[in-house]
Structure formats: C-alpha cells, structure tokens
Length: 476
Image: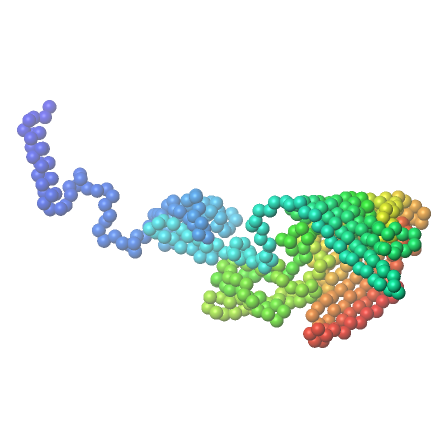
C-alpha cells in the first residue's frame, strides 16, 4: 500500500508539469497530439515513397467506383496491374504486380496528391467523339396517333373531234389508317375499244407497313419483287418484301469511310468534289469518319488533319460506290405467291397459273453483295445466284448464274457478266447475257418469250459541265 506522503508528492509533480506546459507552450509528452502536422511541411516536401496506397481513379473524366492501389518506386508512380485492368487501362498481357504508369500507352495522365486521385485519358479507338458519322438520321421527337383518312386521286380528260366528244379518266381511292391501307384503282372510257368494258379495274390491294422492320405485307394485286435476273410478273396474291423507304435512317449502300491515327487533339476537314468543309475535332488515338457523302461511281476524298500547332497533313482515300451493293450486314428479301395477272388494263379479272418466287440479298462487306433466288410454277423450277463486287476501287463486276428445269424441254442455263466503271469524266459499261435453248423462267413458261441473249458496251465522256458525248454498241 502506498504511503500518504508519496501520493501527495505525485500529485504535486503532476501539477508542476501542467503549469510548466502552459507557461512554455511545449506540451508534455503524455499530452502530445498524435495527428499534429510537422513544422515546415509543404506539398513539395511530401515524397510519398511508401504511399499513396488506395487512391481514386478517373478515366476520361469519369470517376470509377473501384479504387486502385498505387505506390511510388524510385520516384516513379506504379499501379497494381489487376486493378488497372479492372479500371480499363491498357495493361500488357501477362503483366502482374505493380507496373509503372508511364509505361502504359496512355494519351495523358496526372496524379493529384491532395485528392489522392489518378486522372487518365486513354487513346481513342474510333469511339465517342472519334467516331464521326456523316449520315444524319431523321428526328422523330413527336408522338403520332393514327388517323382514318380517305384519299382519292383522279385524272380526267376529254376530246372533241369532228363533233364527237370522247372522255376518259383514271381514279385511285384509298382508305388509310396508320400503317394500314386499302386501295383500288379503275380506268374508264366513254368510247371503249370493241369487246372491252367501259370501266376496267386495275389494282386492288390491302397493305400493311411495318416501319420498325422495314417490311411491307401486301394482299391483292402487286408486281413481284426479285433479283436482277428475275423478270417481274403481275400477280394477285400475297407479297412480303423489304421496303427501305420505311427506314430513312438506314444507309442502304456502302459509303466511303476513313480511319486514321493522331497523337494530339486534331481538327478534321474533308475535300470532296472540289469543296472543302470542316468535320470536327478528334482526341488522341484512332478515329473513323464513315458514311462520307459522295456520288455513285469511282472517286477520291482527301482528309485534312490540322494539329494544335497548326500543321496540316493530307491523306487521300479512293473508293467505288454503287447502288447495286448493300451495306455490310444489311439484308433485303421478298416472297411472292399468287395467280399471274393476264391482259392487265384490258380485263378487270383475268388470272391464270399459280406462281411463287423468292429472293434474298445480303451485304457481306463494303465490296461484296451476294444474292440467291428461286421461282416456281407448275412444271417449272428456276434457281440462281448472283454476286456484285468491287475490283480495285475502280469498277463493279456483277455475275449471274441460273438453272431451270422445265418438264417439256429439260434443263437450261443463263449466265451473265457485267463490268461497269462510272466517273466524273469517263464512264463505261459492258457485258453479255448468254442463255441456252432450253432455259425457261416463270414469265416464259406462262406465255412470254424466253430471255434473249445480248451483248452491250455503252460508254460516255464528260468533257465539260452539262456536256456529254454518249456512245454505245449492242448486239441481240
């Protein structure tokens, strides 16, 4: 047990230490602040050789939710490889542990010691502002409600000759609600040809448009849709076909595109058709300008790059565009089935044999479009394929091969090859269509003459604006 005098001595010693600290301003060791900032400390004296540890990271201005582990090694900032990958930084394959930030392929980086935040700007990879699409999709900001509308188009004519009056007319009526339309058209004559009616029905159909799919369904009278080597028929039945007119936002033909690399913020300009216009600004990295507006045929576009110091660099790209090509991954199709219409415009209701046809086209690349098609009518089957492809950015080559089997004459073939090159000064096109004696299609099976053989070679020379010299050669 402590003695009473010893306890009193300790109390007196403690009071003396407190009084001494108050008078001298120097805290006693037992009462010092463990979080006190050392005297003379500034931002420049903080080396952080053992830090900074877990820190925030912002990539392209967006703060990531997950923090990263940083460390200073020999004066260089390093980052944990796995954490960097998770943040989207381009860490080399196989790297592990801590890697130096300055060895990563970054457009720009900065470490804020006060916020303890690493800010990184990546090189662009034809994304965000570095993907420039010159095709402007139509705006559809409004809300539409279907209306029921009755539309009538008509055309009336009358002639007076030698005291005799003759009148004729045409009328087309349609009942429309939203994407559905029911229509019919007729023609009339006050003095019809002997044996014909004064009023003749032309077309009657119900049609449903599906804008989201770019497809139209028609029930009634229509003209069959098909490939380049398929002859169209007037049919009464059902048709399901692609209708690109319903999708003005689509670029149906492949247009020129340009891809390049810049290391600093750079301005872009185009020179096309003797005109120069500004496109925009791109960030360091890869950039792509696509859907460059141009006329069909062969041509050349120049890209002008202007960096932050005002230096210009010009790069050229050559191209060949054609409406015969489909944009990559874009498809077009048609299914037709019904009874073939006869003596159209002469008799209101004259339908013959049943016929069906189909075709499918797809853009496989900016330079190649493939097509397959078939048609059938009792006693006849006809199938074929086609390819349209660009050669050397100077010409379009198109080839067709078709086979037919008709019960009476057997197997027949059709082959065709066309080469065309269109430009601002000189344009030319040549080709041939060759058919065997036994070749038949639906049109010839139902009464039309077989497709004829032919050779053709038209060309033209534009020596001035609105001045052209056309020439052609053909042999049936």
